[in-house]
Length: 267
Image (cartoon, rainbow, N blue to C red; front, side, top):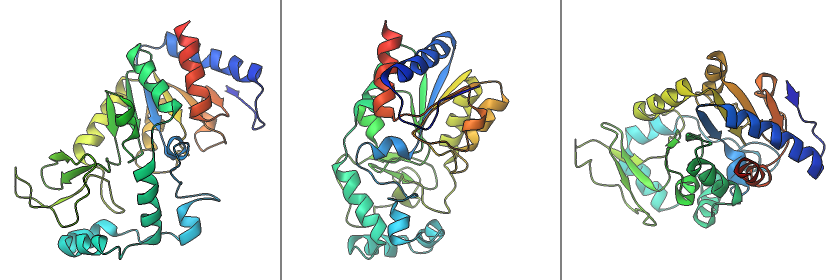
């Protein structure tokens, strides 16, 4: 097992580990990427946890948001319209509105185009992977730019439009419609979880990028991949719960490491 130290790596040290990762990726048949909040932080989106986290500043929100929504969907939308909503949500909403993909996102797109990564499972809701141009993308916690029927799972893209009132019932089944983003207490939609598990089952290598590997059930997919024999590679500035099972653990950000990985694999 190769675990890079926590200190800032020199360019030479960084390239040595990138070369190691590139060798594993190039020798793998099916590589799945998994990204977490660290990827979004580089686009100016604050994390929930940690020193600068939204929950650290404002306190953790109620964990039964989905239950409240289901009890009174119209009331939930009205409260959102009037901004009678947690302060951390307002700050997050502002950050999401202004965020743009960074060089790490675009490097993943290029890695996908040249066949080095077959799919990406993201825990982020910011839609930046989609905006950057990733094709085989599974958004396990949903996409903030879409609406979803909680009965049949039909999704509608909003683009830049932000609804001010409760959406009409689903045109396909008449069910309740909400943002596609998975709320606290809401199960991961079956179609999404099935797709993510299918990708993990096919993977002989999983590239974990910017995730603390603590949010279930998404993080559990990494341990499932390892139990099925996949090689786990981690790119993260700090040690995580995932580090002990990683073949290579690189202490770096996505914006620094992924363009180098793409360049190395292109040579």
